[in-house]
Image (cartoon, rainbow, N blue to C red; front, side, top):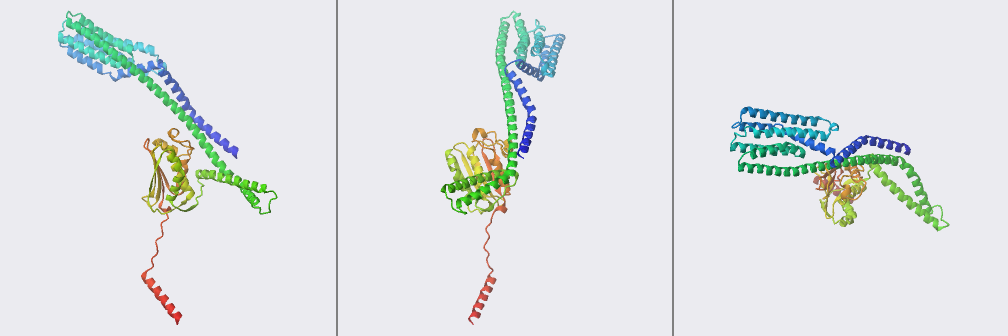
Length: 517
């Protein structure tokens, strides 16, 4: 039977492992890809070009609309025919750039060659910059001072916009903005006026300043993409680690189920020889059938009896755990004072609490009636909860023990700590056998993950409820409530009716009078 159980457990674990393998391979592939990205290879070039393309598509209407506004403003000194031709050139160049960006986004990543696409986008951006630079030479000779200032301001605005949109790829920044900056300088340099020469020099200074700013922006964008790649790689590694831990948990659960089935099956075979050993050793050490010629034999018999008793107690404890898991735990119920049980458990664990400088606060309602419960199970519930609170509460924290009446007339036991808490999505996990929260290994001592499941099972065996409330960095509260039917209410004193008492007294007096006569 043991072999069959092991084979079944191995088959279940193998199936779980096979179910988890595809995501693990996917995580490894994502990890390799993102690691290459953080190494500033072709993946980085692709990400930067993709960011530029998205910027262009998000502002597909902004710069053409600005071109219309500039054309309307330039109508005061430039012929409309020239302005319309210029607008057509700007729209054509912008349409070519947008079409190229859309085609880049639609192309599968595996088919993209970043260097070739960057050359295409640089050519399209250069054409777009030339189309904007042409506005500086539309009837420039007949323009006045206001017209020169208008063109200067308009081109600087367009230069700043193009630098912002193209900042992920600096070669595209230069391809698009150099023609416009050169157009401003050439237009003002050709004018025979020192004021315009100063404006040309100022345009050069402003352009150099913009380039310096864009270099910083480009470095920030590159670092941001690198950090994002590292974050994604870390997430992939965490997911892979979680997948491995899930596989290990499934194997542990299967091993636990196999253990429970094995213990339930072998309990009778283990108890039978132990009972015989205990019985015969008891007879031998008591010398029921006669005294031993050698006194050492009596000592041996006593050692055999004590060892057998210890082994039997150990088997009983292991079987208790398996019975709770299989729903076959038997309660030995009797009147139990909940306050007495909690005080005894606190006394047992007080040294551990004092070692960590923990403060334990008692909030006991006075004169609570007794519960009809299994005293051993109640002690185990309290010890498990208090032990968990001591484990997870950092030094100098506070643990609150509370017992009292519930709103429905029952009684409750509550243990609240100031520990790190449990994330809400991990609460179902910690209530399962061998389940532990993500902070367990960081903030507490080691454990098997059976304390809370056993406590929950014992509470349900007493028709009670188990409630766990926890929030991250705000502590944990576990409350075990017992129903009203478990409370032993004191029986009120029966008061005899006055008339019945008087009749009884009269009857007694008549009987005494008859006895005298």
